[in-house]
Image (cartoon, rainbow, N blue to C red; front, side, top):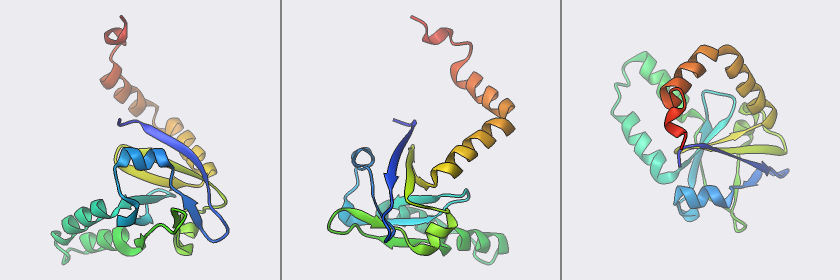
Amino acid sequence: MTSEKKHNSTMDSNGRFLLPASILREWSVKLEDGFVVNRSSEECLTLYPMDTWKKYQAELNKLNAFDPKVRQMIRFFTGGATEMKPDSKNRLLIPKHLQEHAKLGRELYVVKINFLVEIWNPDLYEKGISTFVENNKEFISEISNKIFGDGTDYVS
């Protein structure tokens, strides 16, 4: 399924949270293989299964690192990346520097969109959605028309 799924979660005082079981089932990953968590281009974190991260890393390694923009992109994409393995209770630890980047507190949203899993401060998530809608009405209409047309295809 390619739609967004948002889950409420909590982070304990040590920075640990439990990845929702439904995400793990949909993702078909093994906890013991581990994950990489990293900052996103938005005010959130992105969580990658280790095998996915390795594929992205291989693609980055093919880029021309002599190009300053490419180098900056590689720094951005890999700079905060942290490998993580679940503890004995299947919790994942978010490093302090990444908690600060995403302004995370006790309450979290864990959001799965297609192949991505994002970790959000709920207030920033809701603000981001509102801002997007406010600033992108034409784009939303364009994409909606592309997907749904006039709606007659969905009437039985």
